[in-house]
Image 1 (cartoon, helix red, strand yellow):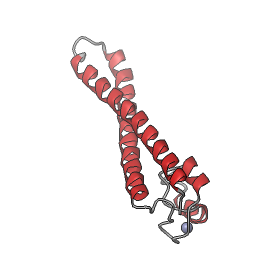
Image 2: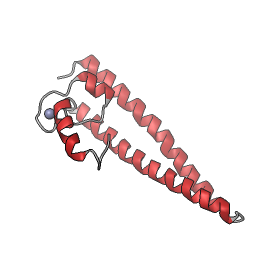
Image 3: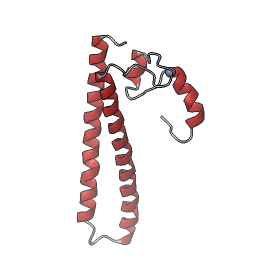
Length: 124
Ligand SMILES: [Zn+2]
C-alpha cells in the first residue's frame, strides 16, 4: 500500500504527464489542419518531404493518444488504491518504480519476465 503522501506525489506526477501530452496532441492537430489548408501551390519536392513529416507527426500523435489512455487508467487505479498492485502476481510494485514509470501495471520481476517475450513487439 502507498502512504497518502506517496499517493499524492504519484497523482501530481500523472497529472503533469497528462497535461504535457495534452499540449503535444494539440500541436499535432494544428499541424494536420495547416497541412490541409496549405495544400495548393506546393511543388512536388516539398510534398514528398511534407508527406514524411506528416506521417511521422501522425504516428507520434497515435503513440501519445495511447499514452494518454494509459495515464488515465493509472489514475483510475490510483483512485481505487490499486496502482501499486502488480496485475500478474498481486505483489506491491514499489513507489520508486511507480514514480519512474507511473503507467506500469507490473512489478519489476514480472516486467522483466515479460520483456523476454515482448522485447520486439512492445519496447518500453
Ligand atoms: Zn508481479
